[in-house]
Structures are given as structure tokens and as C-alpha cells.
Image (cartoon, rainbow, N blue to C red; front, side):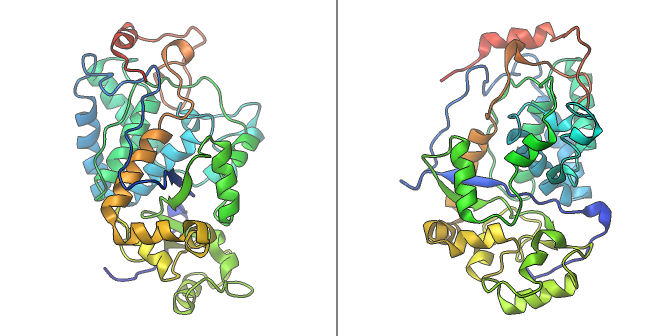
Length: 353
């Protein structure tokens, strides 16, 4: 695969995000994550048995038409989970207290896309299984998994049974929980510690897909070049970004930008990580060996990725009467909360710890 850098129009702004993965350093096998009380591997087995096939069939068409949406939809899931938990607040239009306090309008979320894909899938699923049958947050989690699988990544099961949240996150909360792309490993480690990942070590960033905007890495080029950046690669990036704020983008994974694989870690070993937060994973002695292990062992990377995805997808989930199943993903239902009887019946099948 050639080392290609591309310019893209404004509508295709950065579809990358710092997606931090953490995992145990002991052993090579990924550990099966426990299921949060209220979720189940077979939550919709009776009420919507074709749920995942409906989503997969349509996702195949979506990714075939625009492979860039794979990164966007994976990113959407991360942005949802790291702010208020995996409860679909990032899908909501509006704000907590006014236009300037909007979760969607917070800087980390301005370039999110794929909302229309989630809503289209919600319509298809509800048409097949009934209104109020499946939450938007569950659909978002399944879509993220399918985005990975359909670009060459590992297949895995998604625990289901989430409810959609009633409230927006504030702008400040969004900023506090989504670190910018130029933070060092120290900051990432402390951020993860606050997220109850303190028993684990930083192992990588899910940037094997997607692109970065010049403004996200221009400080590594101007006014002086970052010494951790390969000189030839830096010159290539300068061709894309003649100034720090040029409206253009570069692939995050130089070698296989549209394939979910381990080549991103190979990039880091060659000083070709686009973002400061990426390259610092190899520069920092605490995480360098993890980068090396993933660069030479894709199976290991996939195992650990699945482990952390299942763990992350259960962050602060809402279940039962804690939330609702939205009739439209971008707005909450009426104040008279209506959760379908079919969905409530699923509580009988819930698997807990």
C-alpha cells in the first residue's frame, strides 16, 4: 500500500479523534469483559431477532459508498461513551442550557458525522421490530463494531440493552472528557485513571482509520519541526499543510488508511505518527514496548482492541427505567416517557456479572 497523503474538502473535516485504548500488560490473551447489570449478549433475541443483520446489511452499503464513514461512525461511538457514558447524548440536537452550551457544538464534536446513518438505521430497525424496540445507543454501538469489521478488523459480540439518556452534556463537560490531539502520554494516562482505567496501561490510539485536520498537527511543523517526526514525512505533510491552519487533511495511518489493521503502529516506529498524542506513544518508554508488540502482532492488537471496546461500550450505561428508547435519535421523547412493553420484557433475559 502506498504512503499516500490527501487533501480533502471542508465537508470531509477530520474524522479522527483521540480514542484511547487501555489494557492489562500481563499476558497476551484478551480477557472476557464482564457484562454490566442490565445488559445482555442476547437482549433482542426474541423482540428483534434480525436486528444485527438489518444493520450489517445496510452498513455494507454505507461503507462501500463512503469508506471514510467507518472512522466517523467509530469516532461517534467513542465521543458518546466518553461524555456521560454510552447513552446517545451526542446524537441529541440542542443543548443543556442554550446554543452556546451545546454538546454537539463543543469543539471536539464539530466535525462529527454519521448522524444520518444512525437515524436511517433506527428507522429501518423500528420498521421491522416496532417503534420503541431498540435504543439509538445500542444501534450506535453495533454500528461501531460493524465499521471495524467491514474495514478488515475483528468480529466481536456487543452487549445490548442500553437506554437513551434524557439530558445533554454541557460544552465544558465535553471538553473535559475528550482530550485534544496534542496532549502527551502523561495527560492521557491521568485522564484514563480518572475513568477507572487505573489498573491498566495505555496501549494505543484507534487511529488506524480516519484523517486529521492540519490544525490538529500543524504545531508539529511550524514554526519549527518536531524532532520526533521523520523529516521526509514532515516535508510531505508540509505539502498538504503550507500553513498550520490550512483547510486540508492527512491520513492518520500512512500505510493502509482505509483498512483496520496494525500498520498504524508500524508508522509510529518509523516516526510517522501524525498527531503528537500518537507519536508520543512510541517516544514514551512506558508505552514503547506495547507499540512494538502491536506492530509485529496484529492478532494481539485485535484481541486487546476487542477487549477494550467491550469494556468501553458499557461505560455509565443506562438500563431499564433509567432512560428511554427514543422515537427519533436526535431528540428525546415527550415528557410522558414511553418505553415499549416488548423492550421491558427483555429484562427477564438480562445477564449480569
